[in-house]
Image (tube, rainbow, N blue to C red):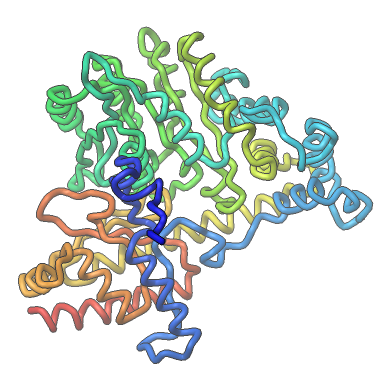
Length: 481
């Protein structure tokens, strides 16, 4: 009998899927997983473990959970714990509120597609407290993490205009979620370079260059800003944000503000300003601009990546378009309810005078103060190494050092068919067990080489990792000089 011909083959597969690349989970990370299995099988290596400095997963790197958050989640998932006197009253009060808002008083039931109304109202209160500006709960859309909320929004841009496909401006270096999603959705990627010499600041002349070139081939519709920056760790000044808003207004762009690291600001003199706060305070005509901003429970001091809770606040969207947006969200039934419950505890943390307040604030500040220490440790160490240049880590959870590679190393990379930074990071992984992501996975100025590392390994492990890194680098330079 002749073999059955597959109905889905590489020839009939959605061509956009073939274009997707996601460096944070790419070949280097796959190899790291293989090495971990080899170590389990007692294969001899010059190291005892793989250090996964490739993504922003705090708890996977030893960060503790926040007790109050987990107490609330335990109560809503197993209500008999309400009888346990070891659970504080403020955790029980939050848990009761969540269960009361759930159908059947159970987090195992479906919710409204944009999330539970009570939680959306609480998130709006959180935003209003943060910015000192009114927030309408009906503009808050909860998703299964910020990634889900971002993807749900980006698909609104899939539309040819004047026989040109839509375009979306994204920073370079960028978080690969954006390039991967744009490729999947068939939206033209418009890259604009961040200015490394200005601590990865955003130059308006570069934005203008990018959009002018893009208009030859596509119709630019939106501008993505990541602040604090991933992978670059910068925090935009208010003045820079105002410049960006004026540019977006002039060019009629929908602003997409990825602000998931808003709690992660470390450098003296740096401060997080939300795009909503700034454009509102700028007044006419900017206060009427279309804006979607995103937040998550995965980052900050919480580190609850696996719970997948996040939101989008979408303002000044036309009512008919918003109706279509809400309709498209309804097709996904509802966001994960445990993630919604987690988001509620972050938007409604213990207040002064409540039993959990002191312990909550101590745990929160301990995490953020430790990250601040590690941010400085990483930048200082890389800047002490030959051929390295690393901007200070103002915020977020990453450093994006620039490295000068010897010509012999570049030639060796070419012989293996690899980008030089990919070659370097594979050598690092095979010799030390340290897994970082090459800069080419995020985009970089031609002729420059970088990599992204998290600052998340706990202090002692990070100190050990950086020592191994320095030793490897010295040997690498000696070998290829």
